[in-house]
Image (spheres, rainbow, N blue to C red):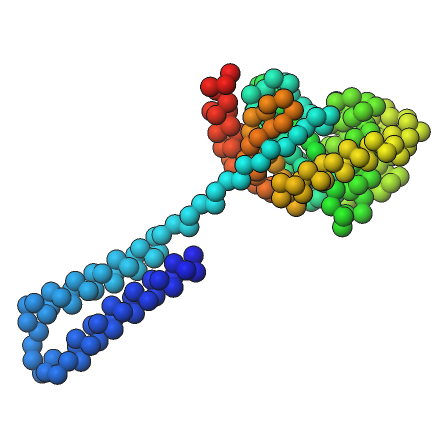
Length: 256
C-alpha cells in the first residue's frame, strides 16, 4: 500500500508540474487560451482526477492463503471419522482468544458442520510458555481424554475455558474429578513421559508449519491421519470459518 501511494504521488506531481510550466510560459498570462491549449489542460486535469480516483479505489491485494499439512493421530476429536473435511485447532487453554472463539463461535460451527457429518473437528495442543497454567491444563485435558473418553474430554475443555481466569493446579485437578477422573490416575497419567511427548510433538509440529500463536486452525481434507488445508490464524468471525469450510467441502466433492 505504501508503494502504491508513492507511485500515485509522483504521477500527480508530474502532471501538476506540466500544468504549472504551461501556465507560466511567456505570454500565457496576457494572451487568452487557444482552444487547443484549453483542451490540453482539460485532458491533463482528467488524468489527474483518474489517478486520484484510482489511488483511492485500488484494493489491497489479498494475501495468498497458506496451505499446510498436519498429522492428527491420537488427538482428541469430535464428529464422524469419515467426514469429508477435517478442521484442526491448535489450542492453549489459558489463551483469552481461544476462550473467545469457543464461547462465541465454536458451538455454532459444531452444530452446523460437525453434527451434520461434514466436518471432523480435531484439537492439538500449543501451550504458550508465558501462560503459567497452560501446559498443566493441556496435560490434564489429554489425560481426561485418555481415561474418560471423548465426551469427558470436551466437558473438560469447556470447564477449562469457563474457569480460565482462575486456573491453578488444584482447580484443574478438581475439574478433572468432576469428569469422573480419579486424582491418583490423573496424576499418574500427567506424569507419564508419553503424555508429555504427545504435547511436545504438537508444539514441534506447529513450529514446523510456522504456527506461533493460538488459536490457529488448519481446514482441509485428510488422507489417512494427515490433513492438508488452509491455515487460518486467530479467533476470526464465524463467517470466515464458514467460508473456508465451504471451500474445503467443494474441493472434497470430487474425491467422494
